[in-house]
Image 1 (cartoon, one colour):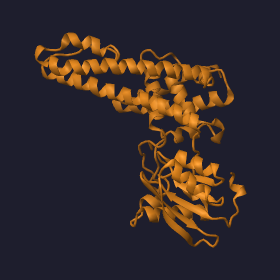
Image 2 (cartoon, rainbow, N blue to C red):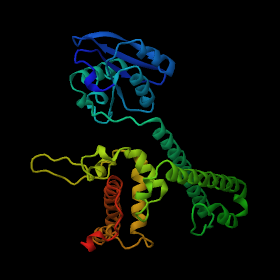
Image 3 (cartoon, rainbow, N blue to C red):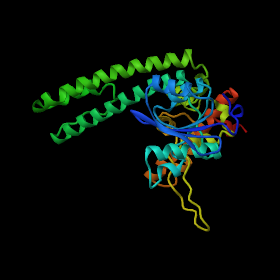
Image 4 (cartoon, rainbow, N blue to C red):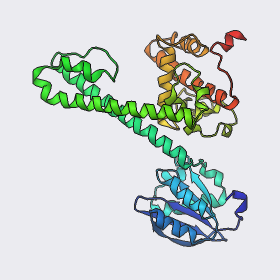
Length: 351
């Protein structure tokens, strides 16, 4: 149901979602509290509760369970607003914070002006399933990294060292370096690393198949060196609709790669990047930027731009260059996707 189909005098519902119970506050036509209570946070109970009510405006905070609750409320005829929790300071900085008060605040903000809630667009079920696949792979990769660091650190204590190699070859190369007294404690870890690598390769094959079959637009993004199927699919399912952004430049802010700002009067200090938005996509973009700036990165406008920044300083400048290239890469990928363009690595030189 669209917002225009909800009358200004219709009831407004604020729902504070909890793991076991969700508290609700219903404002009547006059803006006064008509009903308060709680409902079990299960699909059956939530669906029954929303279906028993006349269509109105529903406000919930973004979270792990907000998507399926928004789906059920929308199917019951309600107009659903998913509030950005980071933007609603009146809720998370309230000195009298509790579930009942949060539900009241959501309802009153949704009734007065929904824009105060900085609404976010819920993703469809197919996109959520793809993101779950990407997150599962990400968890395995981070777990393998922790185990590899544990093995390397433990071997250094005993004077042994694993030669530099890829994560996939770590389990095989480290076996020859393990001292006899550590075999009982390290060999099971190496077996687990090898098993994790096998599962990660399985996820990689599934993601590549998804990129070919379900997300053909990912081929446009993979024109850029350093952007593979994983980064392209993650970018697509995070952005969802490239037309939602008024300008490609705003995508860098969306993924949290722009510096924060706290300007007041003559004071305008330089701050760190905001790190807002999707953490996994931001990490993948920075990884792609490191490849572009690395020894195997081809000569492109992105590489030249990053090298100019890295040349003005030491290690800190290289980090700033990677973040700057990642931000420009996010903008570039949006342009390629939106306009279905052919990537020109040295476009600035051609002009």
